[in-house]
Length: 186
Image 1 (cartoon, rainbow, N blue to C red):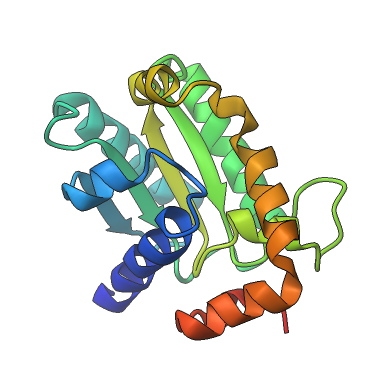
Image 2: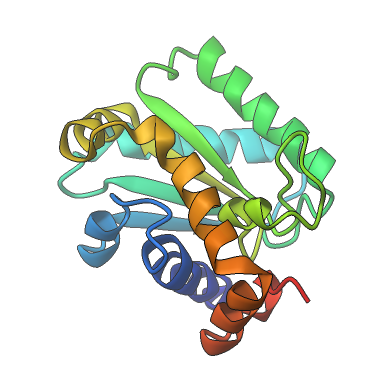
């Protein structure tokens, strides 16, 4: 399971930070304030309990110690539609348990496909990862990022524009140079 964690850390470093997909990801990454949790159970009830435990840990630890968390599902949710259903369930869980003011979710999947896009659209790679992942972000961190980086709502559009400028060949070269075969568009 250490291999899964290392692959996710490598993806964050080379793709998310390296391509500046998230301009405020470097700080918690470089200061080791990210929890990486690998959940291998496939029982939804167990996964919800584990998700709740991560939320509670984030509540208990100050952001100076633990900024954010990635839950890695290496053996679950291979099907993207099943994954989206699970993400919707987690979002509902946040809302019903009054966590939505405190935390936000970001979703990543090896077969990520934005609504309205084609499976092979280059724009989809901004949310493609080595495994299905849930990124739990403190709402206060997003507010701080907005103060530092301005309008964070336009980040996805900037990322897509940068990828389109890079093109499929440039993207594939980047993946090859950085040993990221799981993201290649070949």
